[in-house]
Amino acid sequence: MSLNNDGLKELIQGLNEDLAGEYNAIISYLQYSAKVKGPYRPQLVDFLQTEIPDEQGHAQYLADKIVSLGGEPVVEPKPVKTSDDTREMLQFIYEAEAETVENYKKRLEQAEAFGDVGLQSQLEDMIADETAHRDEVKKILDGWT
Image (cartoon, rainbow, N blue to C red; front, side, top):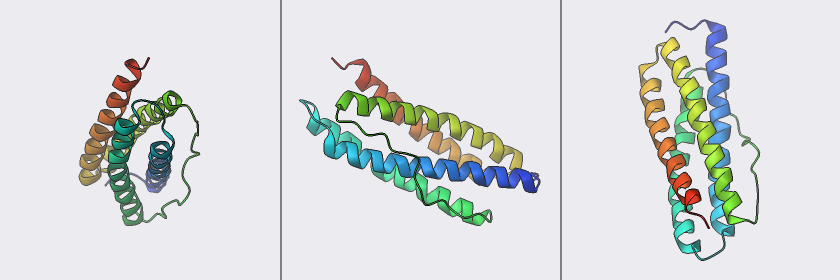
């Protein structure tokens, strides 16, 4: 593990930003699944609620990893965007998932520099999950009328 103390602090800070993003995703999916309206409500409620366990798993992993690296996990989510418009909710999700993918790619580079193979592997899995979430929401948005 080759990161200096500043590099480790930067990695922990980044992981905490990611953790705040996962908290945001959990809250967003919960709120949006309650508020979604329209003819696709049953399908969208199912879709949104099935994403919550993935986001919870990511949050738990990040919190555990932060502690194992000597850090303190954050407890506040990134600000949650709200809307009464179903399409806008989906747009918010798409943007958040796209940002998460990019953030995890940065974290993957940091994990590689740190030499933490386990973190690298987990981040690759999380990138795959978040990319799938992003792509699925994009398909829904592309077909929205």
